[in-house]
Image (cartoon, rainbow, N blue to C red; front, side):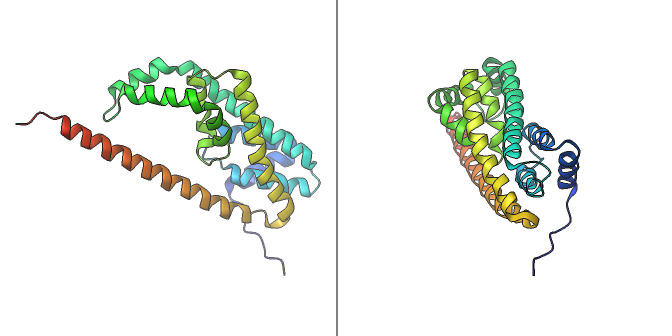
Length: 213
């Protein structure tokens, strides 16, 4: 007996309504907004796009093309925001923040200069970082053509996995979300651990730098 899928939450209902109203372009719009507002989860929208395609509302190819186009549009908006913000403004802000140094920003710039291509490509396939990686790419003014190509490739791979999963699972598309949620929690834990290490090192450095009384 096929298990009954759980009722759609508000995000899923909104995405379904958008896709039913606009077809495949609706899936693209939903993913573009997901890039700009990360609380909108692609792990729900993409399998739903695949499921909707399996019902014949639009083709699987249309689902893949439009969701990848939506990812690219959202990423380009964030790239533009990063380019407008700029590295110098970021350094001025870092100089005013406790426990953060301008040298940290400069090291991040040097790292991005060496590994920015891999960061953009792989970052498009990591929860939370999928949207955020576009901002430092803009700050560092990565060549727009290169950024566009890498973003399209990374987004295309990520979207294909989730759209195909939703297409294949049909009514059970929601099972994809459970595994994606585990991955997201692991990423959050890794980020929290890295932040804890950074703060511990920086606080110790600050204590050593204090003059002895």
